[in-house]
Every structure is written in C-alpha cells, then in structure tokens.
Image (cartoon, rainbow, N blue to C red; front, side, top):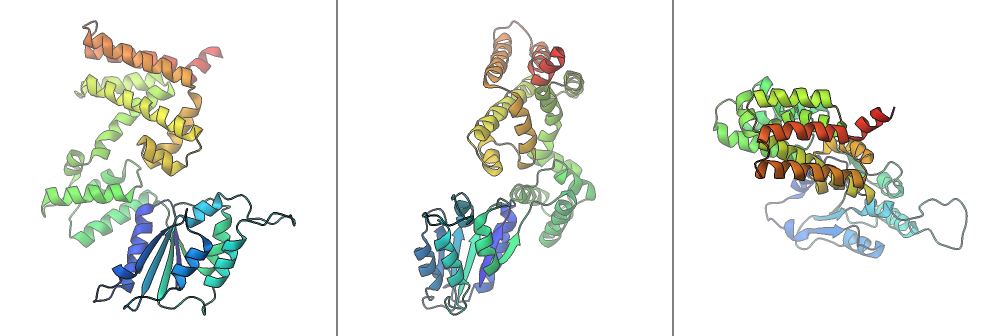
Length: 344
C-alpha cells in the first residue's frame, strides 16, 4: 500500500500518518524495528526501491516513510518533455521508480510506503508521477468553522466541558495551527481540572488571545494609519496597558517585518518565513505585503526612531507614555503609505 500525505497543516498530516502506523501495529511491538524513515532530499531512486521492496524482519508488516521527496524533486529543472534533446530528463529515473512501485508484483504486500510532504506547488512535476500510484490525501488548514468544530470534538474526546464563547475565543485570532491549539487545550485541561472552561479561563491562560488585542495597534502603526493607531493607543492606555509593554510590541512588530522581508528576499517559502520570523502562519501574507513597501534604508530609519524613544525614557528626557505617543506619531509618519499620501 502506498500513501501520499501532503498539505500545509502539519498536524493533520502527522495524525494521518499516526493512523496508518496504528493500523500496522501488532502486540509484539516489532513495527518500530521495521519502520524506516528516509530523507527525500538525499535518497536515490535505487535506495527507495531497495527499502520499499525489502521484507519485514520477524514481523508481518514493514513501514517506510519518505519525507520531502516530492518537494525536493519539484525544484529539479526538467520534468516536462517538450522536445527531444541530448540531455535526459532528471525525473525519468523517478518515473521508472513509480512504475515499479505501482506494479503489485514488485513491492511486497507487507510493505506500507508513505510519502510525507508539506504543501506542494500546484505544478509540482513529481506529484503527477507519484500521485497516480498512491492513496493521496491533502491536509489543508481548517477555516474558522472547521476549526471551531475541531476544538469541540477534541474537547468532547477529552471529556472537557467548554462554553461556546470559549471556543469562539480560542479560534478568534485566526491562527490555524492545530499544534498550537492542542497545546492551548493541554494547558486549559490541566488548569480546569475537570471544571468547565469559560472565556475568562481562555483569556487568562492562552497567550494568543492576549496578543490579538495588540495587533490593532501594531498593524495600524506599520500600515501608517495614524488615526486608528492613536485611537487604539488611547483605548489601551485607558485600560491600563503598560506603555513599556506596548513599546516592546512595536519593536517586535518591526523585527518580524525585517525578518519576513529578509526571508522573502532569499526566496523562502511561506512556511519557512513563518518559522523564521515567528509570525503566525495566517498573518504571513499580510506582513509580507507590508514588508515589500519598506525598503532597507527605511527600516534603518525606523530602528533609529525606536532606539531614540528608548533612550529618551532611560535618560529621563520623557516619561513612558509621552515617549510612546510621540513614537507612534513618528512611525506612522515614516510608513510608506503615509509618505505616498503626502506626495500625492
């Protein structure tokens, strides 16, 4: 049996693989000794065939997991034969592998082969090679409704009582990372100790719900929306949010902006950019759009203002709140959108 598990939701890919693994386990525990994990970026066609056609050792089943092969092959030039040339298509050996693996007489029935992938490009040539011989399953990120349903089902399976308001609060940030949500539920379950979980509990324990209230401010500042930024700042100060914390959130926002810009300049993928910068996956695209407007000289100017604001407080020239208000005004003034508006 051959499976192809792929998609941008790593948690669901992982769970699908665990389901396959659980179906192969036997009481003797020998599956662990008969499980092979291969790096698809380094494996050769001959090595893949050798592992896939090997028989299990003192066990009924063998599990072979190949990670990242299709993504690696998708970066290989070639894959489409437009005309005959002297140079062989570099994907031809893999076509021969797929043909051999697809032959039921070539691979033992005792072997289960799993291709594990992240999200794949729509025109990935390797997908067209291996998908036809596999049971392919794409694991996409859930939308808001599916995410809420997943939280309810996870809580039901754990025996956790959770209010609808708490469910909405957990998923309201828009982050579709099920690994993070699972961790949040672990914390909530341990804290509640059998008691019902409500919105107050989620707000107190889950960092994501606390962070979301800062995004209105930081996003408005980076976008140059001074009216929204100042009104949001006033509201947060009235609610006793500490000015040093708000200033730190602005510094973090511009740091993430610089990291996203650098990652995209180097051609990093969306998932790699999220991992490098620490930006939630659902915000990568919006932050990337802002990053393209900021030149490196402009980002240096921004960091100079951030440093000046910090030093003005440490030297006693301004109090925290006055320094923060001036900083927000200056950063909005520096934002590319604000500059473009003045030029018009």
